[in-house]
Image (cartoon, rainbow, N blue to C red; front, side, top):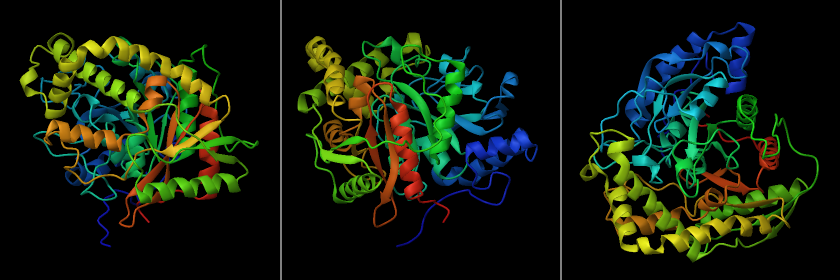
Length: 466
């Protein structure tokens, strides 16, 4: 096969270090935050034309003066372009309004900066994060570093491309239906969606009847993900959840792990199924008990989630001038956002019942974890599609069918608020990464991180630069 991978790894100060290692270089005096920022900015320029992951580059890196003792002090990163950072525009991936510099910094952005990271700019996302591919009606898409003809996933596709291509070792992501875990799966990264409330609540999600959105990061190493959540917890800890602390390696005891291979909405493709089955065998070899199980969510759950998805698009259209900018025009919304809005209008009478049923999903999820410590499944029903397959210019009904057959597993964790992690687990014959998904009970991110450490030690992840 032709090798068309795009990456920026080289012999500069960043090397192929992860964020923990770079922070160690800063603490020891072997590198300065300015040197790291300059090297990352140069890497971003090197790959930008091929992958287009950057929405906005800051003139100077944003680094808080009081974070010198923070674990990630000086590590360069990007913030996703749907979270406000004072002085930087927030474009939401949309051409429907003019993005102006934010007047305030969102609560999560404060928590993110408190870990010590230096923000170099904003990463791109599809319009309002509603799509599962980072594509646009009238702009160039973000491309997958492993195979630029294919999607990097979404909605945190820009962040995923930046991390996978080696521009930065860690970048912000958030997840309202799979948007941390989907790009992690497509780009060979680690993506942990935490329990709802683990981090400072997202400004967008907490205004909704059911808060689907949680923030997090995309990384190339499990220790970076674990170190980020430990650092974030130093800034804010939710007393309603078990403390997480710093997870540093595999757990010690055998776990009961349920195995799910297919969704009621879609059969899993052969390459993804092989990756999940191989991971199940590896977990059994590590001493865990893996047994088939069934998720207690079917077609009705999917219909209700799709309606709620449309409700979000309706709210965006109805409040855009007030919440975003007076320049907002519904006529400039892309085909997916507009189609979701129209679809909601046709079925709005169903929303009270849908909300009741989605609200009860948390109890059904909790019942599943009375007999399991974790559940293993695909992240996506098939591997990363080519650019264009999920374009917002595809006729709406056809696009919705494709999205429902693709994003067939991850929304459960958003509705229920439970944690889930995507881990690299193999590749297609032409080199595209494949991810597997592990879910756990509410507050049990430690279980997921310990399993991730064990799988990483058992078989280190593929590297794009090799």
